[in-house]
Length: 228
Image (cartoon, rainbow, N blue to C red; front, top):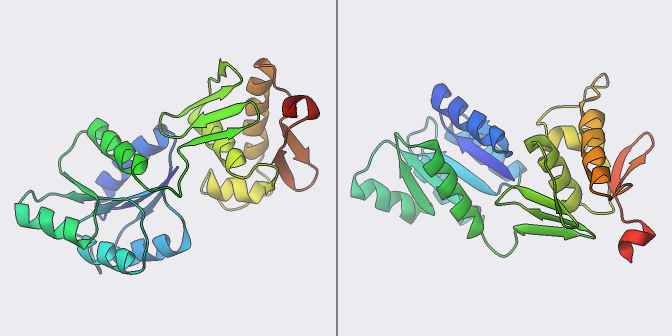
């Protein structure tokens, strides 16, 4: 899942980003309201963590603009204010929930999971493909009856493959979507992690699901036996 964090306090933004990445989320960080709207126009997010007090555009303006455009991405408003009028203004602007600073990270995660769960019919919280099943909220994946012991990065890789089954996924796409990196021809980070994911699928007796497309990337594809 991909989250947009909009926070101008570098320490707070870094704390949230690090925690979310450790939980297996892909994260973009915007430092002001204008940058936030640019990110939201370019990328599809599962949720937006939006600070109320921001430079250039405040959180109320950002939320109102996104809602006027018909964007239904769940928004969790972060605010140091707990006055009822600020809460009401945030919710009226289009936020789905709010969290007052300072907060515990566990509570942030719980609020985030609840928002994503209610995020609309367009988003699938559980993915299946052949013998593979992936729970995007609980961050668990199975191959047949075997619960896979995946690192957060391996989970993100499998999630991306399962969102694009039987499509050829380029290495550049994986670097951008899973690692938030631009293409580096010297890097073998994708191949290393795909190799680890393949090994764990093989140990679960499901070998060959991720096929290499020489010179291009990879493809999640069922063998004839898996189709049966």
